Each structure stands twice: as C-alpha cells, then as structure tokens.
Length: 144
Length: 144
Image (cartoon, rainbow over all chains, first blue to last red; front, top):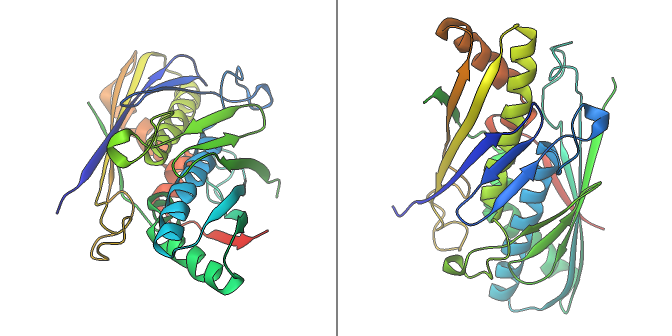
C-alpha cells in the first residue's frame, strides 16, 4: 500500500478568520459579516464545495482521457443547504452540516449522452473528495 | 426550518486547475507538479482539510464563549492519508478518499483540561464540516 499523506496547519487569527498553510499555499477562511465574521475569505462550508469542484474537474478530465473523448468546456455548479440551529447550539433536531450537496455539471464534449452517463458514474466512484463526503470518514480530534 | 444555502461555481481552466467562485471570493485549486498539475493553488484534498480547520476555529471560539473561558492561542494541525490507486483507476481495493483525518489541536486557554475535553466534544458535534466528513452526506450529481 502506497499512501499519500496531505497536511495542513490552521492558525486562528480571530474568532472567525483562519489562515491555513498547506505544502505550498496560504488559504484565508472567514465568515461573512451576516454570519458574524470579517469577510476576509470564503467560509468553511464554501471551501468544502470548492474542494469538491476541484476534485470533480481533475477526475472528470482523467476519466474523459481514459474514455477517449474531449471536453471543450466544463463548469461545475454546486449548492448545499444546512440548518444553522445545531451549529449555534439552539437545537439538535437537524444535523450540523449540509443535508445534501447538489452538483450540476455543464459539460461540452465530443461524445454522446450515454458515454457521459458512464463518465459521471466513474467520476463519482473515484473522486476522493466525493468519497469523503458521501461516505463516513473517521475524524480523530485530539490535543497536541 | 430555516435552511441556509451556500453556492459555488467551479470553472475548469485546465485538466487540473479549477477557479471556484463563491458569493464573494475566487479560489484557485490545482494539483502540484508531482501529481500532474501546474501548482497554481492548493489541491482539492488540501482544500478539504482547510475547510475543516476553518470550521473548527469558528465553532471552537463560539463554544469557548458559551463555556465562558478565553482562548489566547489556537492552532489546528491536520493530516490525512489516501491511496491514489482508486483515483487513478488502478485498483478498487481501497476507498478513493482519505482513510481517516487526524486533527491535533494546540490550544492555550485559561481553563482546565476537563473543560477542554467537554469543549472538544461539543465542537465535534456541532461543526458542520466535521459532520459532513464524519457522517455520510448525499452528493447528487446530475447534468445541467
């Protein structure tokens, strides 16, 4: 087994703003003013949608190449809804996170719709981020 | 029920690079050269770690405020391992995504370790991103 390990360090710069260092980049995450933040970056749940979009692009292109068709344009529309009541500590009735994530792919290619159906099934199966969201993944939190 | 909806649009700029537009920000995602990309941004699975870090910071500060203690320093170390063989289409033996995500919190506060244990349990329960990763979340992919 040949595992790849990815790392990140998040520095709390305020109650809502986090600067995250990955191997090569700094990412700034915040909440909008409407959610009590200082709006210095996209918020955590938007970052999760971005992670999914980026993954679908990489895997989509890889699988299209394997299936020998060309993509001339690829746009990924994502949305998700969450009930903030658990997050703010007001109610435990609903889960804390997105109840579902809807993704609509706008793809222009030189293949037919039957092939595209096979393509999307293969993407869903092989995209790491889609796997981690769609299926349970242990998150082990401890103190340093 | 008062759901909040978050949206993002990902534009494929190359086989590895995606520019994601959220309500107020543009995020650039790519793969490093070692994974066949052009290294213009952190990669999708690093974005997922960043989303989790940002969420833990926001919820950590919110819960500390409810529990009436002060955090003077908060650093979040994250890592996860994945087997790339499913992603590259070579083997179905392992899952595509992170097999687990390990988070180590480095927190300085004016409270005791027993209170911090309660604090971290509450964060884990109420953080939307942690919920979406730790528990299954439907990802519905269709064509526009």
